[in-house]
Image (cartoon, rainbow, N blue to C red; front, side):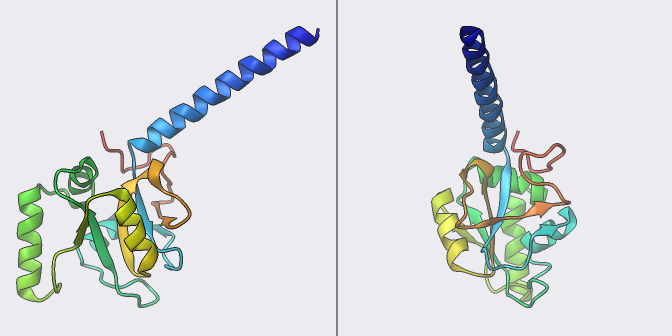
Length: 162
C-alpha cells in the first residue's frame, strides 16, 4: 500500500511540475506591462494602455508624470510591443515620435534599454515609469498591471508575443 501511495505522489509531483513548466513557458511568450510599485495604476483598459504608450495620456490619475520605457531596437519584446500595443512598424513608431516631439506633445521619444533588467531597474527607480518585459522576468521590484482585468498567464490575455 505504501509503495502505491508513493508512486501516486511521484506521479502527482511530475504532473504538477509539468503544469508549472507550461505556465512558465506561457509567461515567457507574454509581455507584462510594469510600473513602479508606488504607482497608483493597477488595472487599465487596453485602449488606455495604448494611449499611455503613445503619450496621449501623460499622467496617471493621481497626477504622476508618465515616463515611457521601451526595449532597444531588435529585441523581440520591442517588436511585439510595436505590433501589439502601438500597431506600428519601427519606422512608423519613429515617425510618430518625431511628429509628437515636433508638435511639443512630448519632449523626446521614450527611453530605450538593452535588457529586461535595465527596464526593471529604471521602472523601480522612477514612480511614473511604465514599460514592458517578458512576464517570466517580472519580480516584486515592479508592479505588473492587469490589462482589461487580465494578468499574464490568464486566458485571453492580449499581449502574447507570438
